[in-house]
Length: 355
Image (cartoon, rainbow, N blue to C red):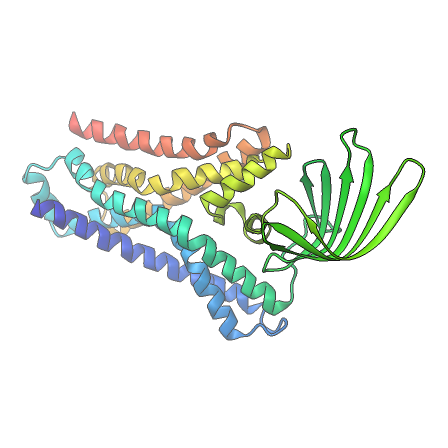
């Protein structure tokens, strides 16, 4: 039990050390990028630093599996360099037993990744984007030059601007009947979500009858829609940085309106599989590190870990893009790279066991 605690402690120290190094590197690059936006509106150096800090949880979520891989291989190199590896193995610990013992570390980082990715990073990323957009007086984004287009039941909605607090500006609602004949056009200057529905301001409503057209000007009115403010996260942050719950709700909304949801389903599967990656990386890194036991020191193993991590990212990105292009089942792009690394890990463990 003491030896198991010691092994896990050493691996955690190595993994956290690598993770802090990677986060510092990403934060530095983020800050360099933010320098280019200084002076836009009231955006200053303090805002840039705040933006970088708020972006850190998202980077933590992304780099944990890579940190586990590199940190594990570095720690194996460190233990080997200090001759501790030989002591551990002579104490009756096989590769399989060491890998199983390290499931404590893998499980810790799996839970850590899940909590950061679903509870902290989405809100932090949203706050970062809202702060920057609000200060620089920028619009959240536009899918087309005319703004965002949304299908809502039999209606088509055009929203020209979305503000950081999910307030809508310049809203145009085109209402169709069951035969897809245009019946009503509603134009509103602003819209805000209150009491379970959208409250519109300065409304111009044009109703098309068979032989006439009637236009009304209304100060305020209500718009009942399945679209909710939290779904506006899809317009503020990328799908990969949304929470699982918001992704699920947005996918459900898209499917109700018969819209393509593949990109968001892939992101949801990534959210499901990603927290398991620390466990997979432990299974892969431990036997692979022992395979390279005599090939070099700790820094060599760290370098090998970086190369393998880059290879994993390339494979993962490539399969994701191919999956989207060919309209494969969303879970394929998330599971295939994971299963490849898991299979290699199990193969190497089995090889050492029967060597």
